[in-house]
Image (cartoon, rainbow, N blue to C red):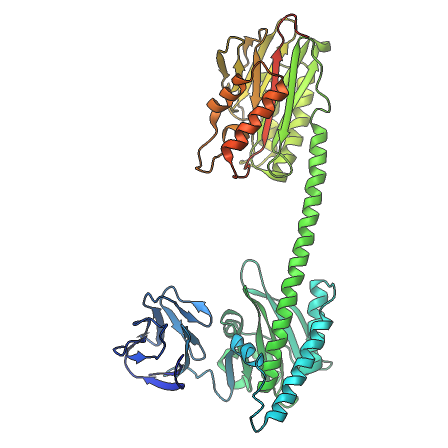
Length: 550
């Protein structure tokens, strides 16, 4: 048998004892429990018994069924003290056979949100006890106002929790008190606690109490912990003579942040309904301030990270060539646009062999953000030394790939394309380590793609690379880029692609290299629309001048 206390949207409250194994609730007169509520569905919800448990199930109602403020999306077990909300009607589970009645003389559970709603309403002045009730109401407002002012200043979380306990001990005088906060990965940890001098025992919370208060949003008043099942296993507290206890969830609009619990030896202090109501109100004020402090600390942490990202970006920009070399008979352009403040892309433009050669390189490290940028710094240090020593592109790759493989996690590698140009003849040696093919646009408009000649650097141990050769003739344009261009997505999740990149560059081939770069960026931005860039964009271009050009 299960006993329900029904408060309909229309009409007086009533109780209903259910002896059958199933009960359908709705506004229809054909339902087992018909509730006068015009916003209730005809067949709104169903209570049914499974073994020793009763379950509530929503029957596809228009406005939903809620247990202790949480929507029911599958059959859910209910217990004494649970409050079922359907439209504007409420059904409280008073008790059922085989289960302890939560609203007993030893223990009382009340939905904390209901307590707050009640406390927000002044007592009616026409009641016979209005004078005393109004005085209690005014006293409570004065306490809450004082607590609000006390907690209002700039403060750290630890200082805030300590100050909350100050006020709780001042107004409720427990022997032991503690604040438990929800951990990011679930569960609760004791964030602050206190005991009066010479207090016996210690405060110990059972799992049952945590479920009732924190998970179900209930405020608990326990007059005798010795006889309450919620303290099964809390022997250290019981042996110390702790009997009376109150607990309240730290509720804010996003849910429970944790809970507060106070306890005392019954001979020293026995808590009352008024104490419970005051603790619920204090817990509500505390939850708001805890959330605000957490938001403030989160904002400060974001500002610190933003500052660190700016510093990292400054360092990374310092690794890029400060000034591109002026090459007789050639034009050079290079640029980088990070997607997350710092970039996982890197480029080099280095003269060598006494100005007879120029090496250009574009690299893309796996990953994004700060971790990727750190790896680009390592790559730059190794590559620049190898390049300046006069090695061919494939030899540079062979020298870098092994150490990169051995010193980085398996998911960290780099795709790189490198070209060494003999400036006098235009002879071009190139190697491509798993990177997007470099684009070579001849002066005649013919396009050639410099495809990969090996795997990404650092991907496997012992990878080998090849250098291939071609020539850069007068008017020919070499374009090295990262996949931030080709894999840029439109609103329809279509990629910009290498063909569009080639069309854009070829269409502006006779213009200055900076004009080509700006034109390509405009086309990619227009293609993506409002979609934010998800990857870094790096572009390096070299064009051999036609004889007679300045």
